[in-house]
Length: 269
Ligand SMILES: NC(=O)c1ccc[n+]([C@@H]2O[C@H](COP(=O)([O-])OP(=O)(O)OC[C@H]3O[C@@H](n4cnc5c(N)ncnc54)[C@H](OP(=O)(O)O)[C@@H]3O)[C@@H](O)[C@H]2O)c1
Image (cartoon, rainbow, N blue to C red; front, side, top):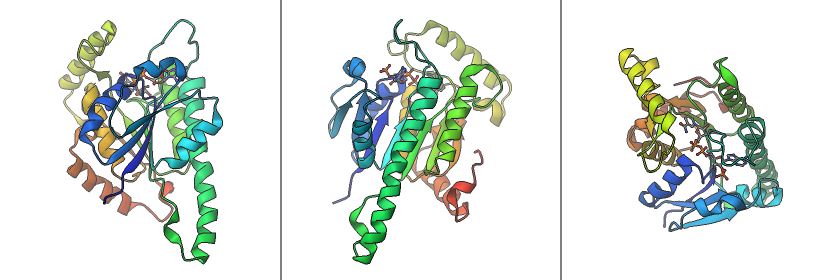
């Protein structure tokens, strides 16, 4: 029987996370743990072959237990919209600090498993531990541009991922949109029109990366990536619209191109 890939989704209660909860039914090879803070657990739906992981981000032990199980971690955390008046935390506390927490938490287990693997190897028991294969970090188009605190924070979070030495893929969507029922942000529909118009006006690869991403299309891109090991690349624009087979071909090429120190190269697609 084919082994299931175990996913841990951080930010499962957000706009993209809720779309992932809907499309996951088309991906039977995943076993998913959806994380929510206690106050947001009502945003998790009941999905087959999935479980909810409800705890505060300050609950280190619970987080480490989740990360120990996971083969793939998806990071959708961000402060794109203020949840309530009392939720005053910003980029430093969420986008940056929680990305750091995830990377450190995954690395705790990798270090321990490496030590155990040496011991196990002596006992000719190589297959005892399952591998962590991929951190999928959802960032934003424009990350790193010296414009505004949001994009600067997104770059800092990306740097944390790169420096973690974990196998990663960084996804940089443009504006994420959905239908009117899901996306209740009126100013976003205006922005969607502007960025789409701009992209179509300058019809080249750079501008195409600004075309808004449908939230379901992005959710599928994330799950397609989750079936593959980290490629240590930044994916944006049309790379987030590829079907699985084509994406797989790209990943195989990128992974083969990498030097032995797989984390030494961080070029963009
Ligand atoms: N939306 C866009 O148009 C867009 C465009 C480009 C890139 N992105 C990036 O893509 C990623 C996903 O976007 P999204 O629109 O799906 O995000 P979202 O709906 O704003 O959801 C963000 C997630 O972060 C969590 N979060 C927010 N504040 C938190 C806090 N103080 N403490 C703990 N968790 C907190 C939320 O949990 P709670 O439900 O518990 O609050 C939620 O699960 C983000 O990194 C975003 O920056 C978004």
